[in-house]
Each structure stands twice: as C-alpha cells, then as structure tokens.
Length: 90
Image 1 (cartoon, rainbow, N blue to C red):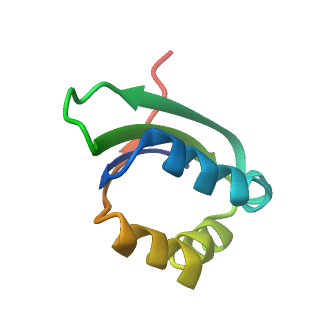
Image 2: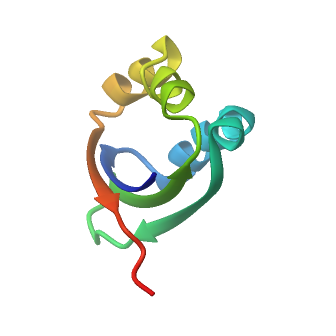
C-alpha cells in the first residue's frame, strides 16, 4: 500500500529527520521504499514534511506510528499528520 503523509509541526526540519533516522530500521522493515520531501513554509519555527511510503507490513507500520516514543514526539512538536492513500498511474 502506498501512502503520502503530510506532517506539520512546530520545530525544525532537522528534528524530524533525526527522529526518522532513529526509526529508520523499523521503517525499512515495514516498507519497501520511502522518500521524504521538505516543504518551505516561510514560517520560522513551523515545518512541513511530505513522506511517501510503500508499506509492505501494515500491522508493523501501525505499531511503529503508535509507539510511545513516536506519540511523545508528535505531542512535543504539536505534530499533525494527514495521510493519503496513493495509487500509481502508469
């Protein structure tokens, strides 16, 4: 299943990328590929990231996203995720 996650949060992009790096092995175990794009918000202290993920293990991915450490990061950064299901067009 391919998804797009638009994450909007208080903080710097580097904080998000550091968190992703911390979970990289778990993300790779639940997906076949993921890409991250940075959106220029022109708002100091407010960041937006677009993540594209091809999930191969939905249960494992859901466990990761709802893990205490991930939930804590979301709360600490006032993060909001909007998730879209994607279908590839040939």
